[in-house]
Image 1 (cartoon, rainbow, N blue to C red):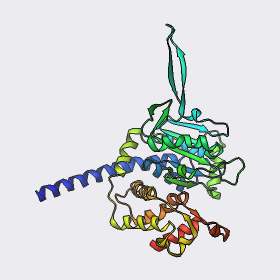
Image 2: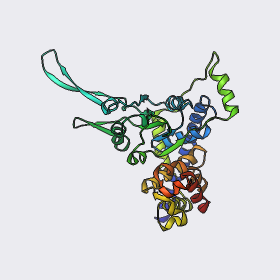
Image 3: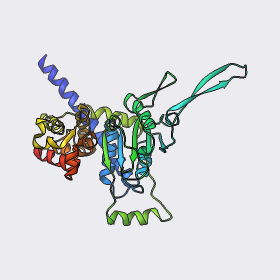
Image 4: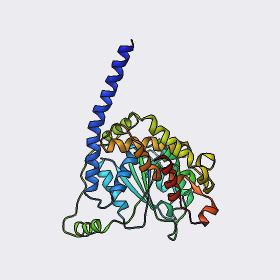
Length: 336
């Protein structure tokens, strides 16, 4: 019986390896297809892909004009997803996102309500400038992001599969922005910073986007391919050293003895959802790079985008010029 069990385990491992090899090729092709349109943002493209591969939602933070909208459009084409965009404004209402019921009258005079689905019923939803809408409208996305369904007039409506939200956010220093509630921030798997491109990338942007022929995205995967890849991510093995690194890092990002002296700077820290997020994204990064198991380096690389929106510093720490990025760097140094 023990031998038979061992053979079954080996067969399962072989199946996972073969599936990972095939899926890795598709995923890297999708990354190349996106990179052919989005220049100078390799890390942003990689982290956005990791977010979707992990089955989560991403928050893109950056000033206007850095191709955040174009990135989401391009991802929709490359991954074969039905993508839609909602421009968030101060007067946007929850029904504008979720949908509403309208009263219809049949030719026979019978009246009934019909549900008209809103733009949230897409496989890839871009919530553009999400922090320009009121908190009430921001929170309208909360149930959809977490529960994969919405409730309108007491009736449940399931969202398509897969379902991902990639929201863009302007820096809070800009006029007319509302900070996102902590409960909604926690629903985002990663916060992805979109910085200015370097000079070489900006030179390429100038020539490639202002000429007669502009680069177009090409499809590299289908929605079914993506669902299969997401299932595979959850089956990739994770070594004990990686699990330990995840737990040490997340627990040390909370106020208390686990953080040592750094804990005095932290007002509140990440909950278990951050550990779950790190467990998924390190697997997805390994798959994207053609590896079949994550390493501690993956944990250190993705710690900041997973943790930074799930913790806050004390008033005293902020008054002294401390930043969340610096605190996370110190916590990573204790592991790496």
